[in-house]
Length: 190
Length: 311
Image (cartoon, rainbow over all chains, first blue to last red; front, side, top):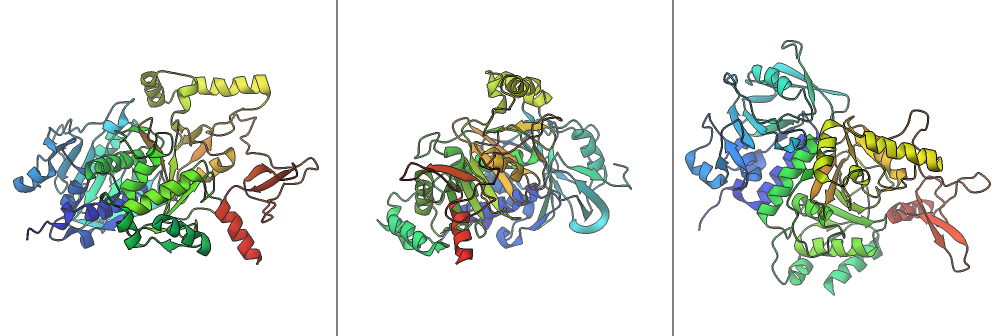
């Protein structure tokens, strides 16, 4: 009998989506997706849940295998115009990298960036979050996400409602930072 | 028959009742998949929901699907509910505060048929997902709950600008000057802002939303709410959201503060519910068999629970 990995099944995708919605509505909240992933990574779980043939994906760092890429159905686009952009965040963003920030009448066209790093919840990069979904302030620490991503993000979201929405993923965890959130980090001076 | 038994069981217990899996499978004779919508439709609604939460108050367009109820009867809310719902969900559906009105009963039956395993409840406190038309429940919503509101007209600017293209530009620029003028004209003509429901409300200091036809009484409940509030307009193909812990400020002038419906009688006393005696709830005005006006809680579950506490 053909075995289908958990992340491609509707019931699993509903559960992953609820975790993503919870993360997006409560920035800084870290969801552990491991009960739903089987042998797959959180990155693939998120992509399998959200992507289909009507959206575009940029994976210039080739974090997704060709076989899985095909199953996602999303068409490939450059990182400047793609709806979903996947990046290896252990390295800094390339020179001149600029995702789609949307348009004032259509800010939803701003890209969703999915940054793959190492650790959420502990680490040497503390972020202080404020804004919708945060009760006052919320501190969350992360590791092996290059700090330059957050300096660039500050520039990308400074003209709200233009901007990008972030998912930070590790192998099993995910956290969201929507564009309306302000991040403070004294080390980075943002 | 089996579905009506399910509703009867809910009525008898007045508490949560699991929808019988056997009932669902027997009534689901056309073998609709879980949640009725196909997975591509759900994915699109889910992507839209994430953007709506990420940009609080912004009306995100989406390809609203045909549903087996007419547009205007809650197709937007229903599509959100069906895209969110899982088999472990505890769902409450209300219409104008009541669990028993036609819209609520039919949507509840539809979900019970197409979502086997979902638990139906009347209790606001125990629901994980609440779909509502025209009311936010009286009982304060808790952290972790999701409220889905059915929306007929999502855009508060429609009263001052007929062109959607222009309205989108106005929203993007945060240009609500003409809406302010409309409110000011109301004050000049009537000495009162005449919007009784759908009161324009600014979310997180930027977008102004139509909070659906909830009474003014419910608008302050959106401010810094612990629950996630999602708004679905199926006919107008828009979804928007107010995340938890988000500012929601009804538009008002500094010298004329926003006020909610007034339930004081001629003697200056706050009217009470004739059933449970509540002095704090939103009241419906009814005419009794003798032709006299009486007042009763709009939220039937709240009223029942107040009565239960008294017993």
